[in-house]
Length: 105
Image 1 (cartoon, rainbow, N blue to C red):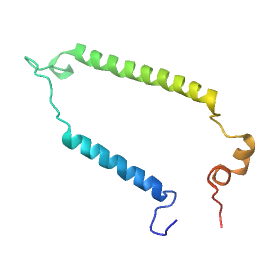
Image 2 (spheres, one colour):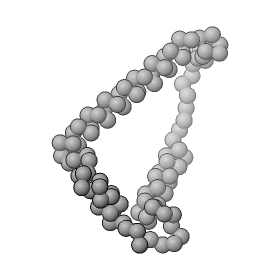
Image 3 (cartoon, rainbow, N blue to C red):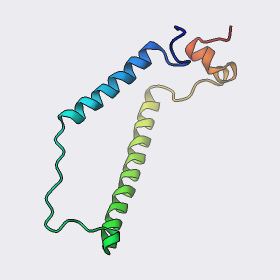
Image 4 (cartoon, one colour):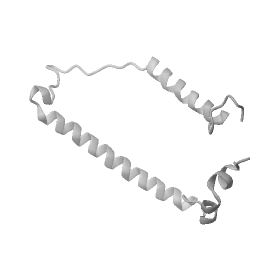
């Protein structure tokens, strides 16, 4: 690791981060953002339409439940193939040493 690199960020992680930032920037540049034309707009809670707030709250709850269920299912599927935890010996010895090969010098 070079002295100019932040601690814990190797060259590959920095490259991956920059690739992600570049991808997001390019997507936003070519993406055409267009809102649907609503006849009178969609008044919210401040305009006296509490139903709109409930619809949005429902969307948030459904998204959280969906994400939780899918994440749980994927983790169970992955656990069938590879273990999700390291061994107790590796935990006691220290994950920096056993998983990354790092040591204090």
